[in-house]
Length: 332
Image 1: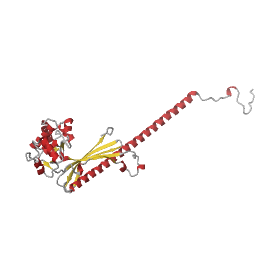
Image 2: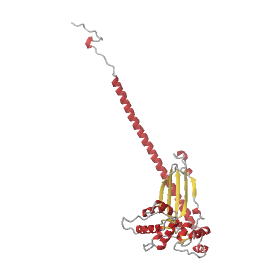
Image 3: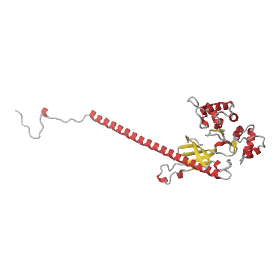
Image 4: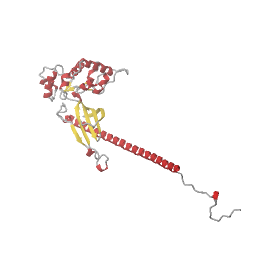
């Protein structure tokens, strides 16, 4: 017979139950899970921060590109205004020379103070912008468009001029025939096997020229949308010696030192009549100019070259624009 149990007392022997303390493996698993969760959260947070940083960098670069583009557009409008005002001048209406205002290059100038009226609210307030540029006479070089006449045939006298220019550049005169034949093939292209017609001198590689030869010819040649005359007042002596037969570098030097010429007859008088100056190849006035603008904004630099045509009115119309990014790690 069992003894009755008092209320509030624990059952004796096997009926008594004990609570077990948590084991060490369970505690270690909880810590490991917490560390894994912490790692995942930290990784996600780092990824979100990187994505945000990348978005900021992309937005900053896009804003800098947009700013430099607008500044270069403003510089082009300024150059067009200079050329328009030059055309209205009494002397400039008859001739163009290197003593006119348009021929003065713009030294690199600081423009950061004009980028924003309120520097306190500008993220790029500590970045300086610099603008430089120049206007050059595109008709101071030989125009490759002159190689082909209205009859869609090569002009022998023009090919001879190109040959003399090649010789003055230290290249074989036979290169002129190669350029002329390839140019004619591109001009008359009727199938995809013909070379593309170059739009600038650097594109002469399309006609089979190597980069070294193109670099030597670049200061002497230009590609314009229509046939043009060489301006006696702006062409370097090498171009004059190539365009004018039998004048040589000595005669070209005399012309360079005596210019500017207001008329072609004045240049003929300078040579004493010994050398014929063909009015079909030479002039003292230009219609095509090249506007070069360069903007440097922080780590970003952009250069733009624009070919403009000055028409009656006067109107200065952009014909071709080429924009490229530049490296800023080395001084220019």
